[in-house]
Image (tube, rainbow, N blue to C red):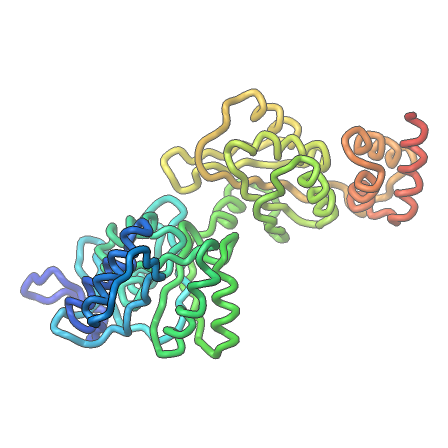
Amino acid sequence: MGKPSDVGIESAVVGSHSLDFEGAYEYAISAIILNSRSREDEWRGACVERRIRNETCMSGDTAEPRIPARRQVSSQGPATFTALGLRAEAEPIAPGLHVVATPIGNLGDISFRGVATLAAADAVLAEDTRVTKKLLAHYGISTPLVAYHEHNALAMRPQLLARLAEGAALALVSDAGTPLISDPGFKLVAEALEAGVHVTSIPGASAVLAALVVVGLPTDRFFFEGFLPGKSAARRTRIAELAGIPGTLVFFESPHRVAESLADLAAVLGPRDAAMARELTKHFETVRRGPLPDLAAALAAEPPPKGEIVLIVGPPVGQGEPVGAGDLDARLDLALETLSVKDAAAVVGAATGLPRRHVYARAVERAAAKR
């Protein structure tokens, strides 16, 4: 960031060239359309634009929000943002798709480069424009917002790709954290790359990494699963498929389902070390650690927790060590209490490193002996 002038002007110049809209009227129209919160507002915005072009506006018209034109130098001045109490000009950014990480809770957890990119972009593509609007307002950024989420992605992607092909600079954000991690942005990035569009990463906050570094479990290898299935049977099947991964497992989970998921993780994976991280970077940040069965029991006895939750499960213990017949039978018996023969054999085989066929045959025998 450049040095403020000697005469006390409240501005620090980050770049000498600026980008802008094609006139204040076009800016107002774009703001109406891009920031509409309902289909009615969307229709009214489309009507305003069409009347400007002397076109007919039909009742019930629900045109998709229009992507703003490439900013041009005008009397409106350069793109700006506010940081550390100073009003700063944002350097122009290259045409292309800029993937910008945003805070996961604490608004201070965004880089200066990230803030400048959001200010200089022609538009910000957001999952929920109401969420991202708060971030932009905090940093005094007036860049228009365009909704891009799983419900409109199929319709919006061609429009966005067309604007990128024309030389626009678009910033892609998620509601919190690094885009593409458990959100629909990867399809836009993939198609942009196929079309020859330059894609740039502006790194920053990630709930996955923020949780990993504070729970005290191994971080040399980890596997991010995202959300487990909603039904217990499907959830246990998926957990069994993950059991043999020789690394720490990372999951996202919703507050109302976390106790059930911990119970299923404990039933399938046994007493592995684990942790639950909640409300990371916020005032009520909480990290609870312990063996899976203990965490599951504690959460089952409490009201559902509030906030965003990350579950971390340590890697298999003793994998690769020699396993005797008695130990194998004990593990199979425990697994068969909650799993099918096939799933029990898969979990125990992955944990012990024994041949799958041998473990499955023994699981069949143990299951038959219990009948």
